[in-house]
Length: 301
Image (spheres, rainbow, N blue to C red):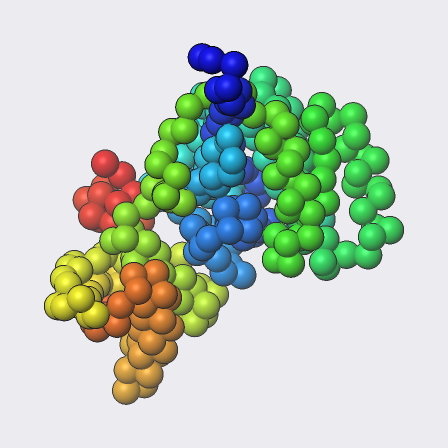
């Protein structure tokens, strides 16, 4: 190095897990932090089923966020897989975000806060959904958690973006020196095929009745480029009952048409091409407890 060579700033990087109870807005927060749609979102709990990575590249740093399913008591093999994903996502990390719904903090949330306080990494407690509460109502939970052993307590709204930049700065200050783990052009480790399946499931979650979405899985059969402007995608939607199949298809195919149209819009934005999407609905009784079906749908290896 000569005197005219610039001094290069050290590079910082790290893996940061996002954990919390179902429906507290973890996936919406991940998307807000990365600035891209990495994870599907819906108002229904247990939208996220597996570990999802989102990557934020900034000058001299790379933050790798790991979104996780909501912490819950598993009742199926799929639930056990989701629980295992959470456990794996909290190993070997460099930071932790514990997310609460500021508008509704339950005893179960309190237990999550206590369970995670022993993690020997920088920890930030995130009070999300502050757009739904009066600022005065944040004073009590911030005071209640002030002695919980976290490095910071930050109110944010992942939906509006309020407080997200402050959260990024808090994380950047705590990142260790390290390499870039992913190319700077990447914002997720998901394949296009995985993302396409999730986009279909997302629209099913929005469209269908409360008892059905948990029993839905999506298998992408083929993705074939027909030209530079067109891709053809065939996919199966799994459900567990014949009655659910009829609801998913709808009268004269109306419901399936809505799901397909909305999913196709997301795919065309993702892929930058026109999409010819063909969907079929298949009944697979109790697939959430079938090792073979879980493997087919990418939930187990």
